[in-house]
Length: 178
Image 1 (cartoon, one colour):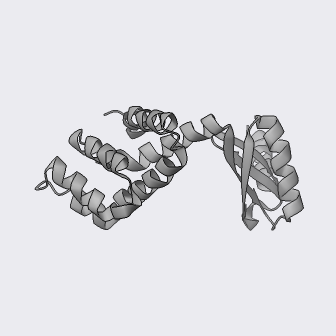
Image 2 (cartoon, one colour; image 1 turned 180 degrees about the vertical axis):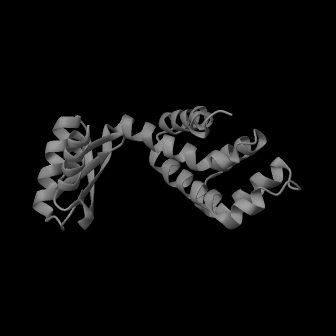
Image 3 (cartoon, one colour; image 1 turned 30 degrees about the horizontal axis):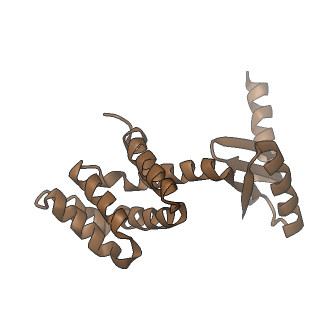
């Protein structure tokens, strides 16, 4: 069976292109996030997976739960997904939509994990340097993980920069064992 992200890609691309062409990337982003979160909920998942429901009933159920949080065009998109038996792909579609949107906006979300809390000036400087290196607007979020001992671990999409003490110790141990 094909990987779920592969199945989701054409739907995400179609949604992205429609939203871009109608200057509604922000609205579609928020509404797809809502639909994806609801569709991923275990209780809703059980209802949507009920074989007694028709495709139309599945779409109507999800659209009813989403209510006013989604516009008619997103509701139509959900109906198309349901008619193609792809409603379970909504979380994957939303993730890929966000990647298309970030590429369009030349932005990237960066997660910086450090052993200790970082002050705002350091985070801002790191964001500025990463923005120049990646040639994108960088949105930095920080987290603290004492297990890395020191340094930082930076994740930007599929790029990982491991400048942590723990990472360096692991590399040293690998080199000594080989």
